[in-house]
Amino acid sequence: MLLRKEFYFVRHGQTAYNASGTKEDHPPHTPLNEVGRSQAETIEPLIATLPVKTICCSPLARAQETKSLITHRLDAVHFEIEDLTECDSYTWETMTNLGPGAHGRAVDPVLSFMYRAAKGVNLALLQPGPVLIVAHGGVHWAICCLMDVEHEWAIDNCVPVHFTIETSGQWRAKKLT
Image 1 (spheres, rainbow, N blue to C red):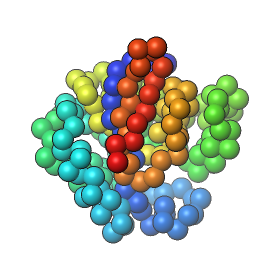
Image 2 (tube, helix red, strand yellow):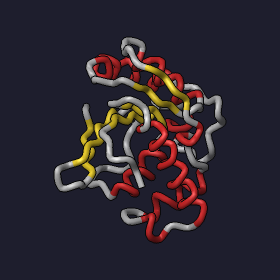
Image 3 (cartoon, helix red, strand yellow):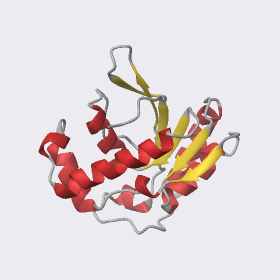
Image 4 (cartoon, helix red, strand yellow):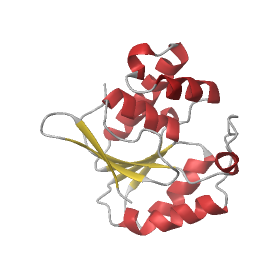
């Protein structure tokens, strides 16, 4: 399902919607709040040390703003990938309630989103690597589910994660903070 290639992943920084705990869909133009900008600035020195060759990002404003803040010192090619866009709130709620192994029990909207997220990650992984993907919590959840990785699938804002493949062929995910 996913190309077997290491990559880095960062969920966008906090927005007012994240902070409020609302379960509504974010408008596409939702910016980071002050905390989100601070989160991005905090991880930027770590991101600057990564051997990233390509940066792929969701087109949504919160991911784009995070990408700009965390990658300005990286000498890498940038791509925007539509398939890395977040899912709607119904799909998120349904997907996260399914828990581990969700792809085996998922309903159509969840499966459609999971396969779209996988397509977006695969498009990113076709680029010279290592690749840094800046996207959303739903994308992270979906790919972790598809990889069947032992890892906290629901990650906080601006948490860098390194995905690698062990010699056994199993995906491994490690938070870098």
